[in-house]
Amino acid sequence: MRKTVSKENLIYYKIGDRIRKHRKEKDLKLLELAAEANISSAMLSKIENGRMIPTIPTLFAIINKLDVSPEVFFSELNNETKFPGYIFIPKADYASYVKEENASGFDYYSILEHVVSVQSFQLSLLELSPNAKRPLVTTAGFEYIYLIKGSVKYFLEDKYFKMTQGDSLFFDGNIPHVPINESKKPSLLLVLYLFTEPK
Image 1 (cartoon, helix red, strand yellow):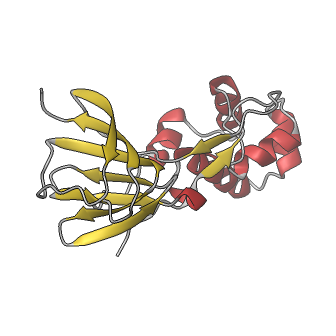
Image 2 (cartoon, one colour):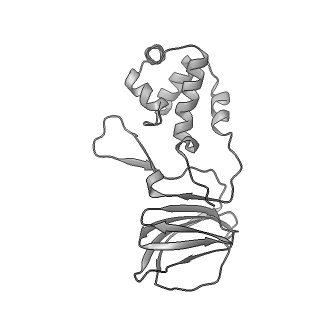
Image 3 (cartoon, rainbow, N blue to C red):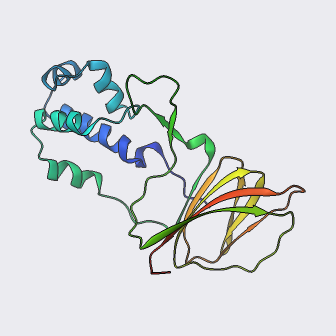
C-alpha cells in the first residue's frame, strides 16, 4: 500500500554506488583509487557505502581518476524512476550520513531527496485537534509532512498512512488528501508546500 524511500534511492547513496561500479569496472582496488585521488581509503570506503557525502573537489578528483566524464556520471544519478505520487518515510528509515569528516556531535539524517520544479514554497505548522474534521482537498503543488508530535491517519484519496512522531510523507497535492487525528491529544505537523503554479 505504501511507497517508501530506500537508502539506494537517495542521491548520496547513488554517488557511492556509481563510484564503486566504475571502480570495479576499471578493476581498481579501493586502496588504489584512494591513493590516486589523494584521499584516505577510510574516506573512500565511507563515500562508497553512503556514510559520507564527498565535497565537490573530492568527487571530481575521484571521477577524474576513474576516467568518467562528469556528464556521464551525473546523468547516471538522474536516471530516476517515475514518481508514484506519494512517498511515505517512517522515522526508522531515515538514513544517517557524515557531512563533515572532522565534526563531532553533528548527526545528519537524510529524510527525502526528490527533484521537483516549483514556483514558490510555504512552510507551516498545523496543530490538529482530536477528531478535527475537513473534506478531502487538493493543492496545486507538492506537500511534505513531518509529524512533530502525536499520531495521525493521513488519507490520500482511497488509502491512508498511520503516522507516528517523526514519520514523514511527501506527495503530489493534486491527490485528494486530509489528516485525521483519532487520538485524545492534539497532533503537531510541519507542512511544507511546494507550489508548481504562482500563488
